[in-house]
Image (cartoon, rainbow, N blue to C red; front, side):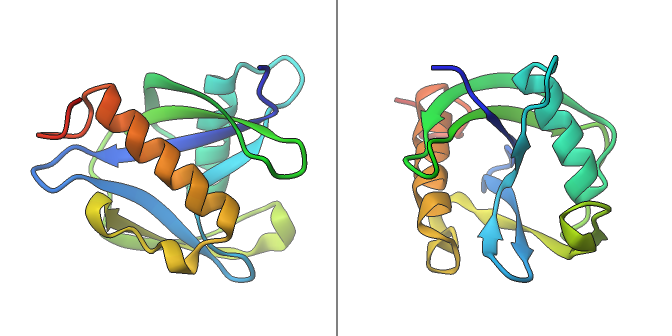
Length: 145
């Protein structure tokens, strides 16, 4: 399964694990996601999308969390676990240069209380996949399995 979309999953592995999400002004709560461009690896695309959509330009890939059939527009998503090089604020806004210059509002969400009701169904399924994969890979403290 070759991915055409890359998702940057920024995870805070504190005693209360959290994921970085953002609110799109027209499309609800989402993960950072975008198209993989010609010649890019999924990891390169995830880091590029993270910089473009959030302003986080200093990050590294921690783990390739695998591919997932989004069952949406024929898309296959690659999830890349990322770590920012420095501390990040609790919340911030970033104006994109693409996607019509929208302002995205970023925030941390606890893994046990994700705002699924505020997400499009494809992001609800994506977040469930990410959580299950984080647990399986041992990235979720106290929830390995």
